[in-house]
Amino acid sequence: MEFEVIQGDIAAQQADALVNAAGTSLEMGSGVAGALRRGAGDDINREAVSQGPIDLGRVAVTDAYDLDAEHVIHAAAMPHYGDGEATPESIRDATRNALERADELGCESLVLPALGCGVAGFALRDGATIIAEAIADYTPESLADVRLIGYSDDEVAVIREAASEARGG
Image 1 (cartoon, rainbow, N blue to C red):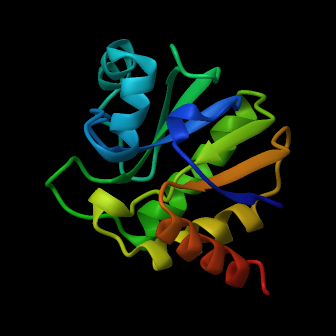
Image 2: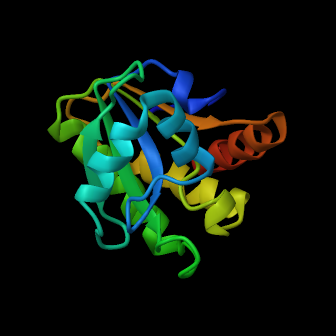
C-alpha cells in the first residue's frame, strides 16, 4: 500500500489511530510513548498497562483520550524497558499487527513511528526499512492514509531514504 513519510510530533497528529512504540509491559515511559502520554493524559497509561503484558510483536488498543484520534494502537516491538532490544521479527510483526488492527477498527488513517528504534536499540535505517516493507506489502481494507512519522530532520531523512528503497526506487 502507499504511505507517506512525515516529520512532526506524533502526539500532535490527527488520524483515526496513532501507533505507540510500546514495550511488552505497555507501560508508557519515554520517547514516542512519553509524547503520547503527555498529549493524552495519564488515563491512557492506566488503560494500556491494564491490558499488559502482551507478547512481543502483538498490539493492544486504548482510547486516545485528549489526542486528536479515536484510538491508540500500542505495538510491542520491544521487550519491557531494559529487558532486551527489538528484533527484525518483532518490528515486522508489530507493524503488520498494527495495520491489521487499524483495519479491524475501521480506521481510514493511521500514523506510526519507527517502531523498535530509538530507546528500543534497533538501528533506525534497518528498522525503517522493515517497517516500510511491511506497509508496502500490506493490502488494506479500510486504511487509505498511512503516515510513517519521524521527529527530527535527521530521523526523517533516514526514514525517507529507507522507505524509498523499500518501495523499489
